Image 1: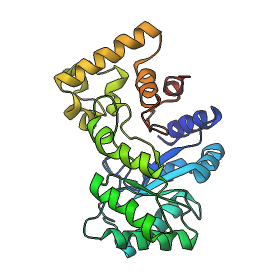
Image 2: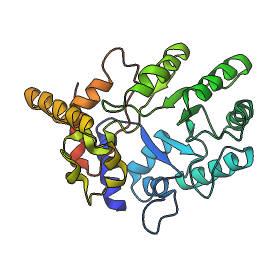
Image 3: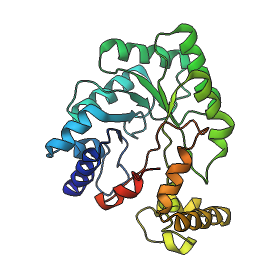
Length: 270
C-alpha cells in the first residue's frame, strides 16, 4: 500500500501539483486501521512524497472517533498528533473537519486564534459546517478577528449542487474565501465507471457511492459520458472542468486517485 501511495504522490508532485488532502480520520474505516494512516503513509519512506506532504498537506482534524469535537483540549491534542504523523512543526491551513455544536462559534474562534498565535497553524479553514454556522463563523471572525478562515471544503459536484449553489457560494463571494470541493467525482460515479446500481456492488467505493446512485444521478452520468465521448476526453475531466468553469467560485476540486495512471485524466488541461 505504501509503495502504491508513494507512486501516486510522486507522480502528482512531478506533474507540478502541490495540494495534498489528508485527515486524522483517514482511513479509520479500513480493517485494522485506527485513523491517521493517510498522514503516516504520506511521509513514510519516499523523499519526494515526504517533502511534498510536509509543505503541501492540508490536514482536517476533529472527525476521528477517538478524538471527536472541537473543544480546546481536543483540538490541541489532535493537532499535535497530526503534526507528529506528518513529521512537521506546522500546517497551512488547518481544517476543522466537522462542526461541534457543543462549542460556541466564539469559542471555536478563540481556539483557532490561539493555534495561529502558537505558530503550529498558519491559517484556518472549515469543512462540513452547515451554512448558518459557517456564516456565523465568518461574521464573528470578521468582527472580532484576527483569524478569518481562508478556505472552505464543501460537498459539490454535478449530482450534488444545491447546497453549494444556494448557500456556500454566497459565503465564498462575500468573504473572498477559497473553495476546495470534496467528492468532486461523486466517489467515482462521475468517472463513468458505474453506470448502474449493480456496477457498484462489491467495489471498494460501495459504501460511499451506493446512496448516490439514483435514477436522476445516472442520467447525469450518461450526459457527462456523452459529452466526454464527443470531446475525446474522459468523463472525470469533464466533471472537473465544469467545477472550474467561470462563475462556479471553485478554487480547486479535491479528487482521489488510486493509481498514478489515473492522474493524467484528473490533471488534463481544461
